[in-house]
Length: 482
Image (cartoon, rainbow, N blue to C red; front, side, top):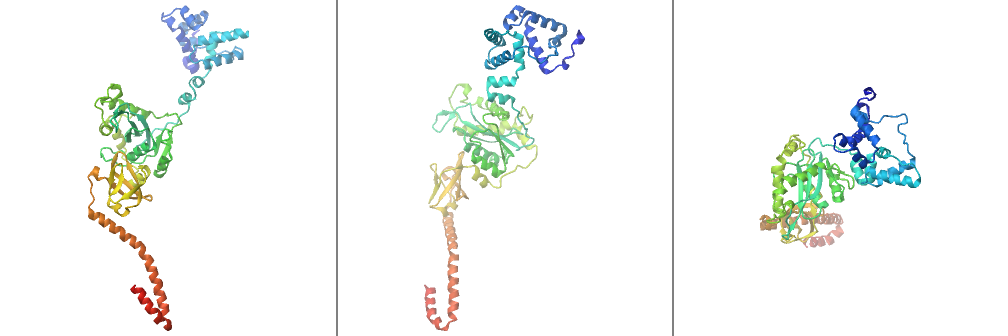
């Protein structure tokens, strides 16, 4: 008898799983936890069938529960209408047990005058249905695709190969501009290889393309904090399919920087586990120790957004970047630096600003500078453009300066004396105005030179005519004297 049962490796995975299912049915009896009567009542399986399973398991182990392949294997010994009916019931009633499905199909067969199937036949039909089909029927297309669609997962093999970006509403209350408690949004850009933070942006406003652009601007350019070394243009910028990430604005950024935009499927944010784990780390390692954390249940002594921003930046640079990552087994800053590569940087900060910084409404240059957000911005270059309309671009995190453009041409970076304490000497302003006047005059001089050339040419011709020379000579002298 022992030779009649090949080793488990001789059977398919499906056959072994079916045997495991049988074992789980009789296991409570084998462990003396339930009687056969209890199992029969719960499953509807015939007593004789259970006795066969118990006997075969005791004699041959799990191999004894593997169903023998018959010569007519694969053929269902039920009418096709019954098989279809069982399948429809299984796919329609997600939460119903097979015992319930068996009872319902038996009621249908009784009404139709058909032979009623056994519980095991219903079980066999259920096993023949693929798990993917059940997932699609019970949980919908999105969940089906999330579990069964083939995903191309590519791991970054060096720093700045792939950056990921995402937004999250932080689990903490901080004070907004009105002094009221409010939860801020965080936009984060993460280097996939090292898990280092390349850039971020905090705001009370809902996610938008502007926030992503500002975070990307910070991520690409050199940081003021020299300990935060992450910078450069990534080869791929991986985002979800939100309207903020797919805006024409960022498409232009990507084209100009030769950066590939990679989107996850619409409504299916898969493959984003790394950045989701980062958000989890923020909660566990940073937010939980601050006043206003949602889990603490108190809003006393809340931080302002500026104070929170400073603490968050310090946490990223001094804590998170130096903690050994659970997956890479390296500190993010060390993983980013160990490759010894030179980041691919934009040609200039001005070209990056033109693409990424927020575009404000057109502003007129007044005699005392540019007025914006209740502040005044000055630079010696602006003295030559008083009365002209310019466009300013700025970073909301740093209103001490704005970048000024005239007809899409970068003019200068104007400073707010109220914030920075920066001053411009009156002599510099006068000098700039005089320089501008000389420039304007130089644009007029060539036109006068052409007129003089024409007059000189005519004078030469007139001198060749002795009769007209005297007549024209006086006129010419008077013209030149004038």
